[in-house]
Amino acid sequence: MFNPIQIAAKGSRPRKGATRRTPPPQKRKTAWWLWLLVPAILIAFIYALTQLNQVAPKAAPAPVEKPKVAPKPKPAAPKKVEETTKGVPKKDTFEFYQILQNSEVDTSHVDAYQSTPRGEQDFYYMLQAASFRNPEDADRMRAKLILSGMVETNIRKTIGQGDQPWYRVVLGPYESRSKMNRAEDKLVSMDISSYSYKVKKDQ
Image (cartoon, rainbow, N blue to C red; front, top):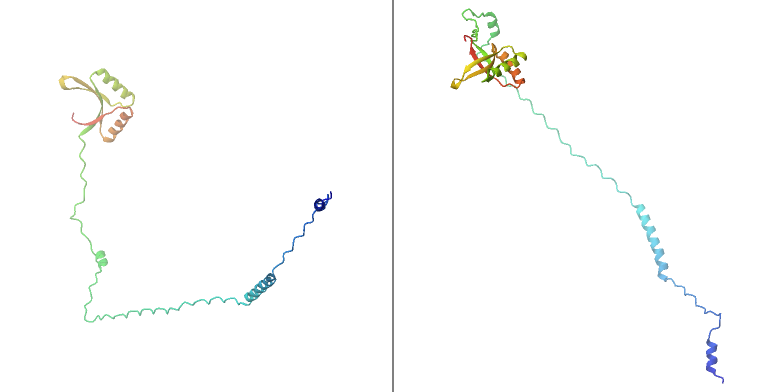
């Protein structure tokens, strides 16, 4: 049967190979006020440049002059007061240089200074190097000191408490303290501690 609906549907189907044409996009129209705005901005910019060129540069400020200060007047020199010497007696002038030259001092009545002679030393200096109970130990110490060059070494026997004898190794006698100090320094270098004492010459 002839169906008109099917015929119409067939006619509406696209043919093979045929493509639909898309309509081209419509061009956007620029607003009419933009055509007026852009030239107005350019004209305003050019006008501003011309006005800036016409402005004259500001002149530099003139230097301020400092007020001149008048120089201070010099103080007037004090007037010299003339001293009146009328009626004032003249002071005595002392010419001591001439007086000393013409005068002589008598020193005959002055006794000349004489130094008092120093009294002679009535004692000797002695050094005790060690003391022993055993005389053999004292002999060994004396020999040691003599070998070291201290020939003025002797042994003295003394009695101590309980009637016990002591053998003392002594050095001297020395007439001056300087000689005794030299001997004492030598004993110190030998690790011997000594002590000094004085002995009268008449002993």
